[in-house]
Length: 390
Ligand SMILES: Cc1ncc(COP(=O)(O)O)c(C=O)c1O
Image 1 (spheres, rainbow, N blue to C red):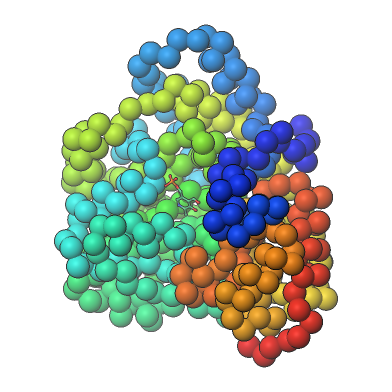
Image 2: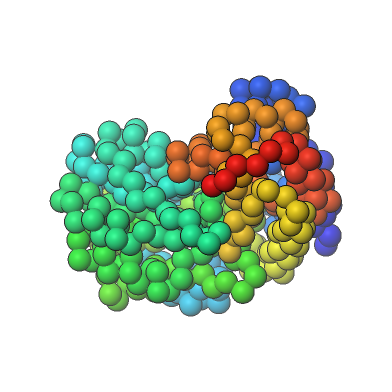
């Protein structure tokens, strides 16, 4: 299948005129912001969904053993992780799970550590649960982001800080944390009794020769771990798929499942079940094509930016690129307005991910190479000729 085939309609959130107007103050914009794909879903998934719909009845569903076995195989083959059925809690969204974890394991005014610039809903969920956002900002050295471990040690030592949320691969900067880095994270959590939430939703898009490591591989060293993940992003199913939490520790799992039962959050959707089971069983070659296309898109961006003052923070994972505009703009609002107006491309402003992202932009490249090349040319042409020292 040719992934460069375009969808007949873009996803609605991405392209809805009202949304574009409120974000970009115009509607004639090419939307390359929210993180979903413009590729048609894998044929086996489409076939399975069509078969399920033609079967017409939509009574109550459950996830049968065949679903779980397909999922178990996926995790074994791709991540050397043995997922145990009883450790999984299915959840409507990752943010639902994080919100409940925060409410159950911390008190109001406790601190939750995050690593900005990072997926903005971490910040929102901490605010919405009346906890304190404690920042352990990532450090940018030599065009790549690193965890500031000295700062993390300090923040972890404070008795009021109870949870660390990491994002692996990291949205928006694209780092795939190495085994060594994760070992340090685990050590710090263990020494300071922090609950570690690892959001691994982007785990399946690993680029070039990078290697993804799930924190589940360290479960024998430390048990206070919850992995939140989903295959929604991987298979372009954000509009229908749910998420899951993998919780090896029995006490944490019981606490969470009691709350899930209380709010009846575990109901299965027939289409989700069918789509994901066929994705796990037959989606691997489609996914490989996605990864190849994303890598090709990154190379096109790299070569287009060679003679530009815009710098690419080359991603190791995810289908987004993080672009550094610090040499061309001084003010983040001016950057966003000027670039949007003059390029006609709708990107996420970096400061949406925290003020640490100011003067950066995130671009979604899960689309055709033709579109990515067109967009990056429009962006390079739009920036002013002046130059600032960093
Ligand atoms: C790191 C990360 N976590 C979670 C989500 C969203 O997951 P959910 O819709 O299940 O809350 C996203 C979406 O962009 C994301 O990037």
